[in-house]
Image (tube, rainbow over all chains, first blue to last red; front, side, top):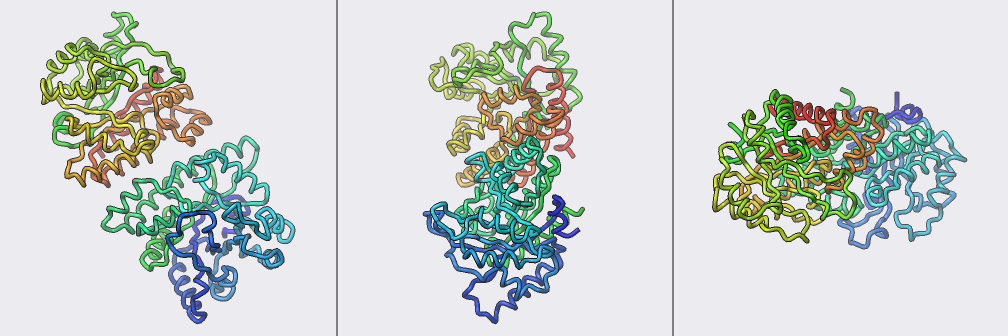
Length: 306
Length: 306
C-alpha cells in the first residue's frame, strides 16, 4: 500500500524524509546535482514518501534573533517538478499559505495529482500578519477545487503543553478536511504523548476516527542547531541538551536519543491504537548531519517493518 | 554484595521494597500477622533491602484537603524490632526528624547497627514548622554519634522542574553525609532525567563522585490514589492519567507504565554512568494494589539481573 492509500484509509506505519529545497541564491546549474545527491542518498531507504518544506520568514513570531539567518528557498513544488521527477513515491508538499496570492494558490491546488501528491497547508506564523489567504480559506479551496488531494495540518505538542487545547485544534482541522498531521521535531516525549492521548480520547468521545499523526525526528549535532530548534518553538529538555553538550560525539548521541524517543512513541501509539507515521529531517545542511538523519530514517524504517 | 556494601562503595543496581508500618489504631495482636504477611509476600523477591517509611502529617504543606485522611502509624523502628526480625536483608529506616525530641533522636541514631540498618532523614514538610531538631541538626548527629550508619536523603525531581536547583541540594546533602538518595514515586521521566543529568555533570565539574539515586515506582490502580500522589507533590503527566482513567484494568496498565518508565530510567542512568537503585512501594493498602507492586518489584529485579 502506498502513502496515499494508507492516509486515505486512516492507516499509519509509514516513514517519510523531509527536505528543504535549496536556497534561491543557489546557482541554477547546481540544482540538478543537489537533487540527484538527495535522491542517491534516500533511494535505498525504502521510504513511503518525501516531504518538501516551504520555508517562510518566521522572524515575525519571535523577537529573539534567529540563530541561522533566513534565506528564501526555491519553491518546493517547482523544485520537485524540475529536479525530483525520478523520485518514485508520493510527495507531501508544504504550502505556507501566507506567502501566496489567492489565484496562484488556487491554480496550484487545482493542478496537483492526488495520486502522487499530498499537501500540508500551514498558516502564517504570526497572528499579527494579514496574509492574502488565511489557512481556513486555503483549506476551503482544496475542498472545492481538488477534494481528492489529501490534506495535512501541523500538530504542535508544545502548544498543548501551554494551552492544553491542541487536540481540539487538531479535531477542528480534521473537520476542515485534514487527513493527517505532522509535528515539529519531537524532543519532549511527555508533551507528544499528552497530545496523542488527549486527541485519541476526544475523538473517541465524539465518535470520530483518529487520523495518522506523523512525528518528526532529527539528528542534531551542535548546540547551534539546538538553539535554532528552540527558536522555532521546540521544547528541548535539559537532559537532552546536557547529553549533547558533554558528548564526545554529539551527532551519534543525538541519533541515539532520537531513535530511542521514536521507538517509545511508536510503542505508545500502538498501545493506544492511534495511527502514526515517522518523519525524519535534517536540521542543518552540514553533510554529517544529513547523513546522520539518513541513518536515523534507516533505523526507524527497519524498526517499523520488523 | 549486600546493600550496605553497595552503598558504601557508591554502587547501585539494587532493588528495594518500601512499606509503611500499620496504623497505630491497629489492634496490637494483629501486628505480627500483618508483618508475617508482608514477609511472606516479599521473601521470594530476592530484594536487596526493605524501606520503612516514617509517616508525618504533611497537611501543613498543602492547603488542599488530603485525599486519604492522615492516620498516625506505628514507629517504623519499633515495628521492625518487634515484628520484622525474620527479615534477612538490611533495612532503610526513615526518620521524619520533625516528629522527635532531640534526645530520642540521639538515642535512636546511636543504637543503630550500621551493618543492618541505613537511614533516610527527612526534614519537616512545611517551612513554617519549627521542629525540635532540624534536618541539618539530625545529619550532624549521625556524623557525630554513628558515622558508619549510612545516611540517605530525599531527591525530588518535581522541585527540580520548578526551581532547577535540586541537583545543588543533593550535592549539599552529600556534603552533609548523604551516601544515597531516594525519590518520591516517579511519573515524570523528563523531570527525573533532568535531575540525574544536572546532578551528574555538576558532580563531574566539582570532582565529586555520584552516589546512588534510588527511583521509586508504584502500581497505582485508582484515580483516588493518583489524586493522593498529586497531593503529595508528584507530577503525573496527563497521558498517564488518561490511560488509567480509560483502562479496563487500571492496575495492570499502571504496572506496565511503571515498568516501562523504570526500564527507561535504568537505560538512561547506565548510559550516563550514574549509579541507581529501584524502590517499589504500594500507594494504598488495597490488596490488589500491594500485589501489583510486588509483581512490579519482581519484574524490575528480573530486568536488573538479566
